[in-house]
Image 1 (cartoon, rainbow over the protein chains, first blue to last red):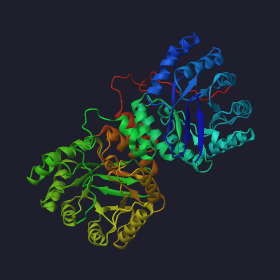
Image 2 (cartoon, rainbow over the protein chains, first blue to last red; image 1 turned 60 degrees about the vertical axis):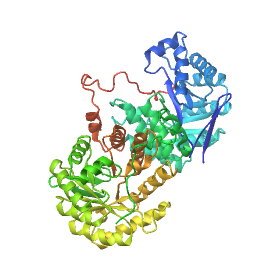
Image 3 (tube, rainbow over the protein chains, first blue to last red; image 1 turned 90 degrees about the horizontal axis):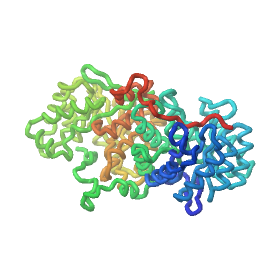
Length: 302
Length: 302
């Protein structure tokens, strides 16, 4: 029932319960991408543009834009990246920085209602980010950690999320504009990371009634064949009630899992998106997919 | 907490909560496989043998054996198939027929504790199948439909499952030896099929405390790229608490989704099975999977 509406100058996207899952493209982020970091620092944003177009073509409903290049003027870089991306695509953006001045610079040039990524439960961060979000009428990603770090206890993380939602309300930001990130840890380092995330996502939805997101690729960090793990995680998280994620739609395993999960949650009406994306151009009309298939016999006991 | 123990002459497999998911290979089934049906009818079981070996090599923990060839002597065929499969593999079997005499013939030659597939909630079927299961000390798949057919109401299906479990107890069969099949419908025909299954699986686990299984490929009947839909369904069903399924481990999308779901549920300790199955033989030790990867920056707010 909770809808988080974000927009560009011309397009609205709704993150919400019982709606198609929202994929927020993760690629425009120089963290760990040396070449991109170097280029952005030198004022070359051609790769940012290419990444924006490719992700939207692959099915991203929104794009995350991060300009965290070490020793660079992050506010200026982020503003420029936001302007550039908005000039080539019409999907709403998630403006991503841990530097409040950079968030402010990005919001200043943004056209539409942005998703600010992010605020934590740390007092100082909340008191700097939330007024900014309120002033711009934006939505915000709330990360469930605070001064004490990232708790391994899902109950503590839930309490932190609840506190951010309450504080946001004090600043006039409705709960529907707070999208909680339960913080996904690498499953290779912490075997309970998946179950913790699923349980927390379910509670956030059922008790706090907020939308949720996460940096999905974290879950598979360090594992072989990791995009399958990320895609499977996303499907299971969608089953638990997650409504959006920062992920890479260019990875077929990720995109397919999200689209199939939409089908299975009944959010892809008549499987239209799935059938459209997976149509075999050589198949005769009407025979698609059903040729040579069988259905396990289950009825008719003797 | 509920363990369903099945066995061959030499190997035990446990279907249970918080354990690795049990894949029951679906291939040995002439339904919709004209060539196999023809061969079996003519006494040629070479394909049965090949299918058994291939599925076990691909990771099947158990095998379903069905000999439902129209106009053939199903009890004789099923007994022969069971004997043959037990002579070439040591995984426990699910003896699958809608003909009670065939179940009886299969059980008569089976060595170990079989899974009988299946009993429904129909009075006559319960009264014929359950005594047979009890006499052989077997476990049984309980399909949640009755004389009135397959209800679209998950509450009715739950009630039918509960009735079968209670009736089984009357025959001395413990609830731990009843594996409930919530009956998975094709999502292409019924958009709510996924959510219904997930909700029912969760209730069966939490309220009835039984293990669950299903014919997984039903979900994707008629859809293009269907193995992705089946695999994604399995992962989401595992997230909801399903503990086994009749599926095809030869489909990489299915097998990968199940293995990744085990990782994400914490059932694959230290991701050992996943890493073993996905090891890149060319990667130098220690560098596997982590090379060139990045982890989204999340900490260190400024």
